[in-house]
Image (spheres, rainbow, N blue to C red):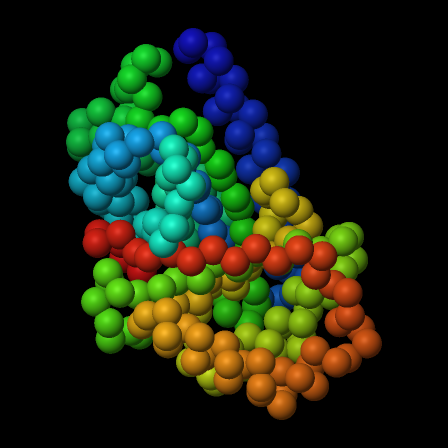
Length: 266
């Protein structure tokens, strides 16, 4: 088991180095430094696992990330979940790609974290805290290079966060959709209409590529519906959508409604 753990860590490091070279070249080409995001998705089998992961995240993982220099971390749960498989989303913003690897190393050297999180970190094979974990790595759009905490008035329990995932037929079409947000400045339309975006980003590594993702926030479901009604009727959006160069650049759109955990920073 020890050999397997080391091998997986070394393999992950190799992936990070490869992505670092690719993302650095892309950032230099754009001339805009931006954040990187790690979106962890935990699959949970039951309420017991949900409770364990909540305790681990609130009392061990988030405090350790804060100590490592990550100011805000988001934890979100779907408004509706499938029976027997609950999802838990953890959003970690990094100010540089190198910070992803250095943060992982710092956590393994943080004795307080290893102590506070031992129920999950040292979990036995026959008493696992989750079924599986997915990880998505993303690069922030130049039009919004850093994450933002939504300016909402409603209590956290009432808020609705909307995570959108846009897949494209090919990498070229994905570039077209990304450009729609940046060069076409779709981001500005969302900002003008008060969508309270947390991030907009292109996926560097994930299971639904080529794709992009973004997260917006609302006081409640009615607030969300009102905002999208304004967006769909907006003249600037209609003009942008009608441009030939932006046609057919989304082959599938997934929309997920979330609410923040009580201890989430976002």
